[in-house]
Image (tube, rainbow, N blue to C red; front, side, top):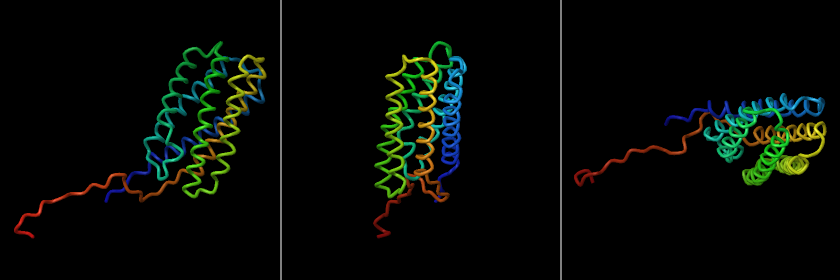
Length: 202
């Protein structure tokens, strides 16, 4: 029987890890340099969100073994591509929009990761509690980002950085804990050939 290619899974997992690290780095940058211009922030977030949207779509269609980390990534991948395109079309003077939209996306991701944490528990994954705790914290940070989008620019940039950092850590923990790549993984559908047995053969 022909085994399923693990290349899409490997690309998705590596992409998830790389983008999570980028989110963490961007978060630290925004926290350290809150005086960055809105244009720079908008371009950075627009590119990162768009690329992560593509990675999420690859992950969804990769059909990994447990189907945990990527199970909601079709919707989130499309959402991130749209959000990234909107931000890149006009990166200036969109700080409030970026914070509210990204805050909603982070909140939703945190809620879905809570579901993934409980699903991971059923699969016997020991790190499910870590995913759960980080998901709750990330969801709360997303809420704060949504409802504090009218505060000062520097404080808002720091809060945005904290949100990106927590989102990066959450995705990194989730993909490392729940995505398993097995070289000899069988396809979902097993193809079989059936032959009609005539009366003479019985």
